[in-house]
Length: 346
Image (cartoon, rainbow, N blue to C red; front, top):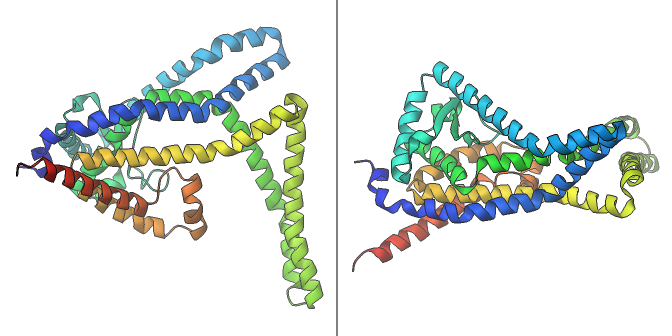
């Protein structure tokens, strides 16, 4: 008998833990995103007011319900994509079998979810699978090719954890209603980045020409290379701040800037916490050893990434490093074994 199936009687725990955690996940996502949601509503109203009062009325009626339409379209597209991939993928039968085994262990109705294979090497450059709002559980073709059956089930159990930890549709709605402010912030960052890239061309040419010159000239070149891009970035940032102040006022603009800058870091921490929570569900279902195998495979890809990306990962990355996740999984396994040993009759 499969070792995971033998642990069926112990599997109610992770489902209950996940349901208790769902409320805090959703509240955390809402609190972190609330400033962007409010700013997005204000942007929709302000832009509509520039056209006419009639558009303000239309926006006030359409914007609050637009999320439901976007969610419906997203679910339909995800379903159509799943159906197309399943019909074209001979591997989906094995994924179905692996998902059925996970569903038995988790004591859930597996038919309520649709597992399928996506023809990608990885998702976001790191993950072997993902979960969607349409109750889809997706693994990449690369994951299917390189993972053992137990590791494939561990990935599916992890994605099940995401479904249990938070309502995917509600998180999709939150993302939609904050999207105008997020787009504005990304546009501002892109403008500043482009300016910095353009103004670096001249100083780099100067530095290359003066590299073999006298030491005072080299020092002057270094100052030019350092100061000019910095001044350009600060200048473009100041220009964006001045334009924003014209419409929002200085106090409101400063608050908006601080909040928008802080939000990506807060969202990254929330996303990392969700990954640890999904790992916990997989461990409680008995897939800890297989999940560690998956994380060891991901660590090789992680080690190949630039060092500066790994340095900033704890602040801005949606996933913790595979090594940190592996250590957390080992700690959870140890706790689980101790709890099992304590429950054994003496």
